[in-house]
Image (tube, rainbow over the protein chains, first blue to last red):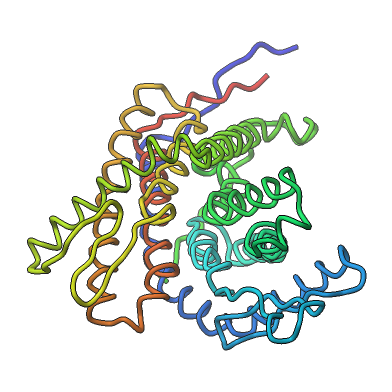
Length: 200
Length: 189
């Protein structure tokens, strides 16, 4: 077995230049990415609502949940087994669930020193993971509404453990993991470049 | 976006025959430690006692400072706990608006990154101050948005300012990791 030896580390100047380029590119990319995200938001909201509804139906028998849209940004949680006048049990802003796409796009498109094909391919994979995360987040959000937001009905149908499970799950997914998902995914693809910019 | 010069990639120092986890040891360690610290930190602040004895007083402090800045800008505001109000608008600063989330994400990223403790502590000190300054600007700007452009408040509240605060934390972390962290050199067998 060969003895351990230090590998050639990049000169500090190269590391600094790579980091400075990355920061500059992120700042340049953030507004165009935000504009594209704004344009795609109404379509993505529909995809998200339909997918989450289908996922919720896998846990229901009969299917009692609907997620009708109120406008381009807002939607309702509707329970079809409630009296019609009380079936819209909660209103929420769907757009708030996925604005992390802006940071994701800026981070992935800003990486310096790699071909555009690789950059877009990595962004595509990260976007796919983010879409699944968003569907899962909306699923947890609706369960959180059922378990904790419907007063006596919640207390009757969900025990203390279930209320804490859906409440903490929604809290963790909606704040730390939603906000840090772009950084987590970026680190998965590119952390080694931050550690050693000369490594592919 | 500006075009970047493509640089030829050199060979990685680790052999492709090595198992995945060994080749990507540093990345996996970073992600695991980051997720544990992040999950632990956010679970901690969701405990009622911690929220009541640490987060709420901290948030009330942010409300006082923001109210003072708004006073300097000519807004006649009153503060009550975490609520800032004037005759036209009122905001209640709650979890998600106090900068604690961005601070915890930054803290987890700095602590998970391979770096000397001295660099980590320096980064944490500077980062927390900068994130709180950005958050102070957010609270003040949001209050003024609520007073003068109430229709823009919802979008501004979540999408724009939440992104700016998290972005500032991410950029600070990249800057710190790139300039001050100096990760130890990789050794090859």
